[in-house]
Image 1 (cartoon, one colour):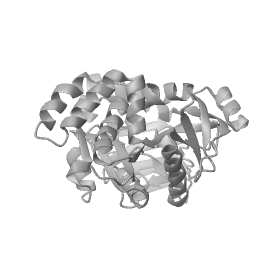
Image 2 (cartoon, rainbow, N blue to C red):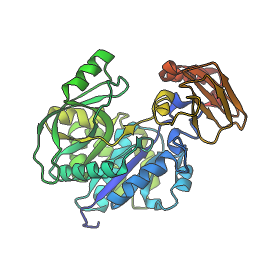
Image 3 (cartoon, rainbow, N blue to C red):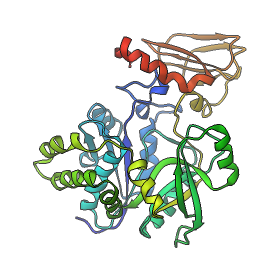
Image 4 (cartoon, helix red, strand yellow):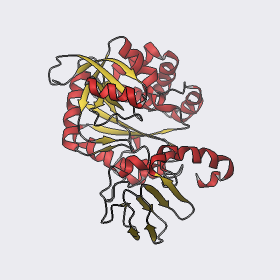
Length: 365
């Protein structure tokens, strides 16, 4: 064990991004894609922004994507790529890395940041992370709350209370509760109050504090993670991982740890206004793409001809010409084996199509 007390980032890289089908697939999920143009995928951009503020970065992913993650992150040490035998939700994934890091580094602070989110202002983001780390050192479980820019119904919310007066973290507030995705009227009330922020699923804490919370609220999960972490740097790692992992509780860290800890006054929030999105569907992707000459938005170097196609979104990996005439507010995603045409207003419902395809065309997922 080293005794550096540094900050270590954990990047969970999972999920298929089904609302971005047919661009995002089970074999090539959205965190491996270049969704904002340029030459960096979402996971590469995530690691890029975390590198200047962390002593090290760990990525937690599944067996299906481990090789692709290693290719995209060649500088990531093998010991910092944690491979889950099967999906067990975020509490197990983050807890695995935190349990191992607690043994590697005395008094380490760890922070979890999803591999498939977008941050527009890295400088502000890093300043917020620095406040979160300072707040975590004071003993809190910390979440980063995104200052809402509109009454979103697709995000959960964090309600804040009084300031915490933490040295080095002037913005830190106590969290009073987490709220699930609201309807539009409730979301508007949240935003107007000034006390609610979007829950982006970013959590920061001392590794030992986080594991104590696991033991308090999820003792079965904590016991399994301890067993795996004890064997992690031994020849028994694969045997223990294979035996223990399938039996771990399958639950998100928000429900497992954050919500009960908030009810006991142990969670803080650091507000963040750095331009954030989880790119949950093609409508949210369109908000991040610049409009073309005709008002259509095009991802990547695509051969597109449009006329009178305002606010339409075009994504293509097929190499074919895509032509739009007299259609507005549509999404067109053209891939070599599947074509999606949808109303932008129905972007959230792409998942419904994916669910239907599981029984008819599973090979396309």
